[in-house]
Image (cartoon, rainbow, N blue to C red):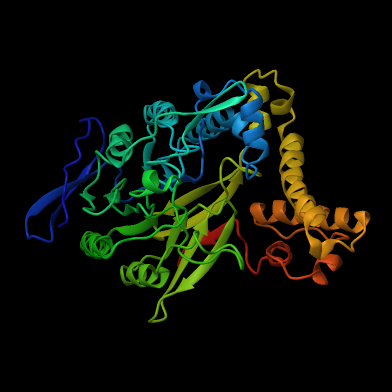
Length: 443
């Protein structure tokens, strides 16, 4: 059953009241702080993977962990997060959305540290709204790093999540789902946020690993329909926000990334007249359209992970006169932030080059290990293997950036290579995008 909570706002905030009826017929009031005739500026990011500095001494255990990872710049997690939030403050954004994987592996200290930073953002006048990702709750991988050891550290429960981030959506929700940490928020009278918790975390501790895949229950889909009806009654446009992808954003990376039973979710969102959705999880910058069973279109916008090269985030503007939205990705200027704030770390001061090299090397190293150890490539020369690894390193980088990769000598070798997942991945990243992955305008 849909539940309504009245948002209590300071008397100095401009607000407007709308009378509406709940599914049970009870009349309530929805309070929104931004006038209906105002344009709206929204910043959206995802996969922050914040690691609180108190959890690492940057020793050998941490260095090995980062080197074995998927390219996240965890050693500079605190600086990247601060640089991003400084951008939000400088832009005087009306709204900040974070669509899951707020923390590295659900560490309680990381959640509390990030929440403290978000409190400072809200004090500047920006409303913040968050939902969890697959790394954030009941995560048995929560770790701290000391010298040459990884040690378990506290993770959090769903109840903890809604309490820690109470000021960032949960205490202000005008409706909360009974089956998940999903909620409906109204940052303005004409733009509402459908914040969907797609993470699956109930069995994480028993299975000893966080669940990668995501989904929505039948009960949550019914709740979405109620939210859609409520928004329509109040003349508000709904933006669905989730961690998992609404549709496929790669020809080979789909299982565990595209939301389970995605056609049902697409049908539910399009039935509610939603034009686009915001998601993350796959870490790349990618925009793709999906179609409902009755032919309606919805565009899923995946923003590049804030923690991963090239560290993009999304700027969304709502034009009140035209009643439409424009999305434009923006690269975070970490190097500029470091110089402005008097950093002395040479990696931060030359971050663009450092970031390029480390992310390229991450892809190159994984490929060269596979090529050197696989029997399928035993007959290939060392030179050819290095060319193929170079192509993997480059294609991987440009796939995450959402742009076409440059031509490389190893591509022809991959074309004729024996079948493997790595070959499929490299080939899938070799084609230029059909449309821009950085720009979108709603109908």
